Length: 343
Picture 1: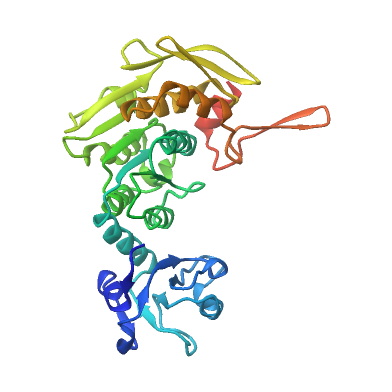
Picture 2: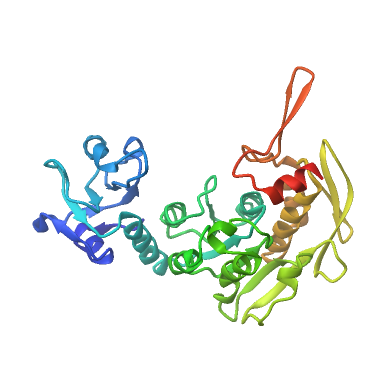
């Protein structure tokens, strides 16, 4: 995050600083974890079902926090300034959106019902080989994770690879408002999170808001084997690059072999290996290849990234326990992804 005074931060979040005479103090970063506060940070006292961030303001103060952000009156006297806002999570997003408006890096938003995190990781690792790139950590894809990713961007960053996940209608609008993506990757449309999105049509409408938000000089990378992405109801303003296994795709892959040791696939005359269990992971690789090719990353670099890639925790991890083989796909699994695994 760029250096900002407490008075400016209060203005951005539409909050009120107490005491006001501390407005000249400069903050240099943000934190939502009192254990990870760095001197100069502002500490967001987020609340969850099992914790209240205000209980940790004292710890944040000891670690060197310059200010706390709260959305309810402090229950005890604080030893540092605080900014009262209506909603701490919204305030975090507002600061990230302000920061986004003031950096030059291009933002690549990755969304979809399946494979977002792995696709994001592959794209990030490929771009990092040629460009100064910030990549969302773990599954930082919501109203908290997305802002924290954007706030890591510095003046010399060239690309930001973000993950944008939604569970309910309207959430994509806010993520777009915060990130203002320049490019998009949509991995798939499937009946996932229908409890908040309604049905497959509702899932498609929300996910595709990312595509339709892009400017005319932009590019979107879509899974062309997914009929919900191939048969768009309206034409986007941006260029669309389709990837997949079908002949119709601009970036067309061919699975050569797949098994316990991974997938071997071919794009044009080049062959690659991705050491992940499950034929469907080829789509994550093809999405990353399409992005890498678009930004001029050499094929040999992409081959190295694919070959050395390891699954993220809880995503098709293969473990040996004695003579038993365990396939761990427990992270946020859904019926569609489990069907792919068992198929």
